Amino acid sequence: MTVYDELGVRTLINAKGTATRLSGGIMRREVAAAMVEASQACVDIAELQAAASRFIAAATGAEAGYVASGASACLLIGAAACITGLDPGRMARLPDTTGMKNQCVMVRSQRNFYDHAIRATGLRIVEVGLPDRYAGAGVRDAEAWEIDDAITDATACVFYVADAQARPSLPDVVAVAHARGVPVLVDAAAQLPPQDNLRRFIAEGADLVAFSGGKALGGPQASGVLAGRRDLVMAAALQHLDLDVFWDMWSPPPMLIDKYRLKGAPQHGIGRSCKAGKEEIVGLLSALQLFVAEGDAARHARWLKDCETIAAALDGFLVTITGSNDIAAVPAVEITLDPDRMSPTELCLRLLAGEPAVALDPALRDKGIVTVNPMCLRPGDAEVAGQQIARVLRQF
Image 1 (cartoon, rainbow, N blue to C red):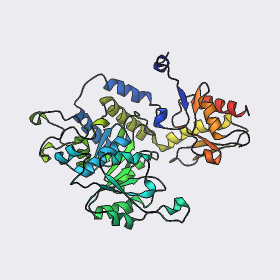
Image 2: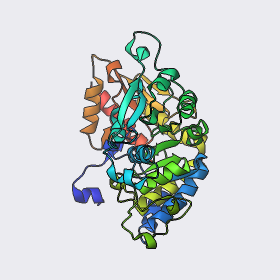
Image 3: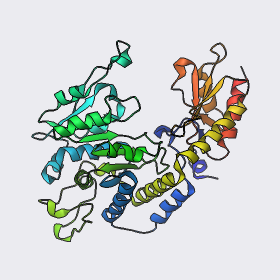
Image 4: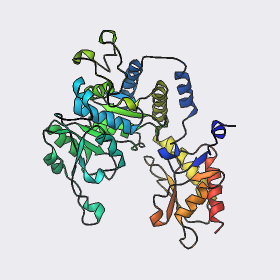
């Protein structure tokens, strides 16, 4: 009997992908083992975060790094760092940004649910650009000069959501922002693979970049990576760590926090609720090491094999494997349904109600397509998922 059996919670085959509402992916046993080992001793969390900083810096090319409870948490503490710098008085007042830089410039077409993390710090998002290419009214989107026009003395940062379709390009955004002395914070939560993206955004000039730890990296679901400038990572750390300590007894690792640059120890900061435990930090670092060691080609081959297994089980139905020739992509199986027989919604619901339950991705349901994503499949899951999908489809 598993822990989930004891709790009365059904397990499912996650063929949708690394969605948080489906509890994310499956950690490798090495990662889980590292977390268990970490749980059996106590350490100074600042010292552990300093070690994480060195590890993340080596993997990303950044000056420093940090671990919080998810990519959204990293965006929150990163945005807070851009507002306060190393001023503990300002840190104590957030989210009240009165008298501080309290605006964040953002391209309108990049707005999404997750920018709530930015607004939670007290920043007001200033939108720029008209996404005509999405509205069907034209071909243009925001341009770098519009970002430049929107920057004022109240601008704390420019927030950029990385994506293959994002416009303007990050180097163009960095150029105008840095010319005005404004840092650029990048949301790259789901931008792995390819593995090169670990370094790409820093190389293109981003001041801070956030990655999810629980997606392709394969780390704990409640973990995220913040990488970037040393001073901004320090400001983020100061608003995240437990600082209930006497000043004369406080000796944080200087490479993470140089206390002598401060006029006093900050109080607990706005990022305190984004805490990462020693287990998550160690698990994330273990997962990052495994991710880098495996490489895009081996990872793609592993995912593609599962896609081919599922496609073979669906012989006779209209299926396509996308991304099969691009090792920088996540391959997937697209099932195109006959609308006279079954809708995508009905297929997904029937599979979720089955035993075992199988979760698919209905994002393309308006096109009559259901997608199978292999990122969270365990050994043997592809065979079972293929059988379950075929069983339901053949009922109609």
